[in-house]
Length: 110
Image 1 (cartoon, rainbow, N blue to C red):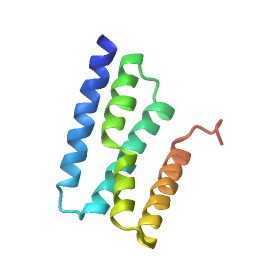
Image 2 (cartoon, rainbow, N blue to C red; image 1 turned 90 degrees about the vertical axis):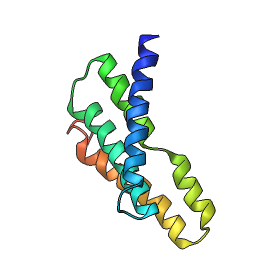
Image 3 (cartoon, rainbow, N blue to C red; image 1 turned 60 degrees about the vertical axis):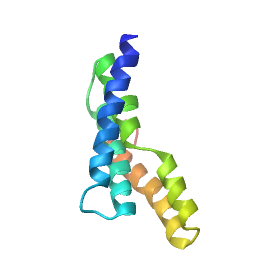
Image 4 (cartoon, rainbow, N blue to C red; image 1 turned 180 degrees about the horizontal axis):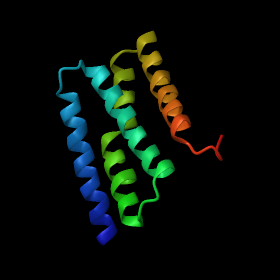
């Protein structure tokens, strides 16, 4: 039960952070893109650069980063606009996420 509450607390913080980013001065697809990349960076940093406790890892990776990022927003953007920009947005999100994780990954992984 304690682990579930930790993940839930992280999810609340991540979801609220995502909402605040999306309500910022940035336009709709750009703010979602930034929120997704920020969540990936947080998860990668926690996983690759720190040695967190189990509860800390649960809060930050599936909780906060999971609440911050969502593939459904990428799918919605693609459904709203079925054009080359939507396709570029999808592949751009995946490519940028992989680049972030590659930059954060320990040398052993490279």
